Length: 176
Image 1 (cartoon, rainbow, N blue to C red):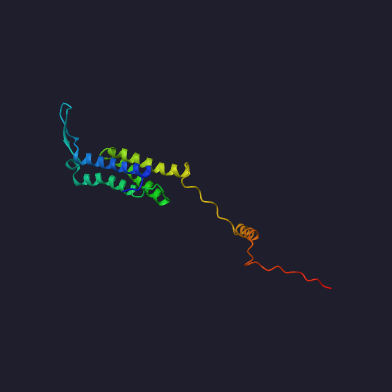
Image 2: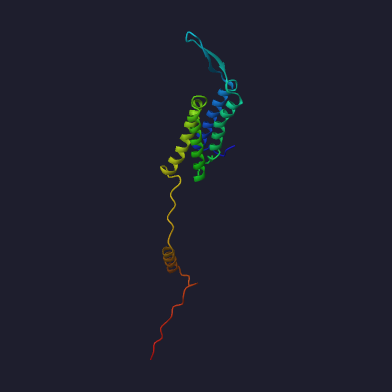
């Protein structure tokens, strides 16, 4: 599939997606405890249910949102590791969206998506560290001014023996 092993940011993004899918699978198929009532003597009555049984289709729809956010965020991470500004913007936006989901729905569903959000955050940090610290994307050289370009062209013409395009030298005539 790949000609070489993909960049570590892409691999970490895939791990974040797998963590998000694992949390979704646990929510859909795993059993959670739901408190059904409290007895007169302070005893709790509980039953084991999954998200569909406790929250219905509304809960399932909210449980599917984080894997979709994670998938959208990692689709912006190129396997080659050569990221552009738009890749970083999409990744940061997806990471913030996932952390917002975790914060809002922490007590119901969000706590299970913390590992995926943490891994997605590490992907965003790795993209910035690689660009700034390791010098993979060196800064662009400053644009040369017209004066510097003209001087460079004049020096190049003086070094070469080419006389095409040069003004002919005028010889001064001697007057008698």
